[in-house]
Length: 112
Image 1 (tube, helix red, strand yellow):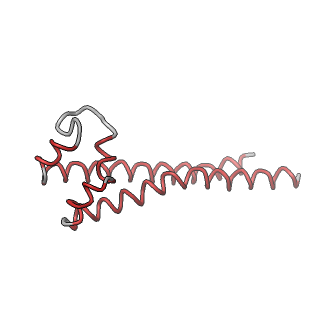
Image 2 (cartoon, one colour):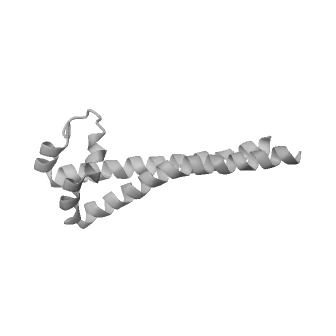
Image 3 (cartoon, helix red, strand yellow):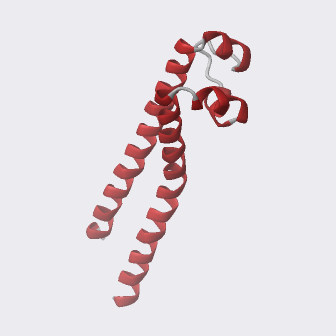
């Protein structure tokens, strides 16, 4: 049983690292965009200059209208691509990891 629990810790650590990286990179993207393009941020992103949390602060960067602006800025475009990749990992890593752990647990239970 202890060996099975030890397999959970790396999965939890990997999930935490992916989620943390996604959080950090998405905030970097938002704040750099807001600093470079304050008028666009004010116009297109609700609560852009308030501390109030709003999902639009992230979702805006995946809309067609933002892609036009971001493509012209290599730094922001690269950050957007990183955030996109990390969001995909954030969705894939937990269920795939837990499925692997479940499969391993089932193999252990059937053996013994």
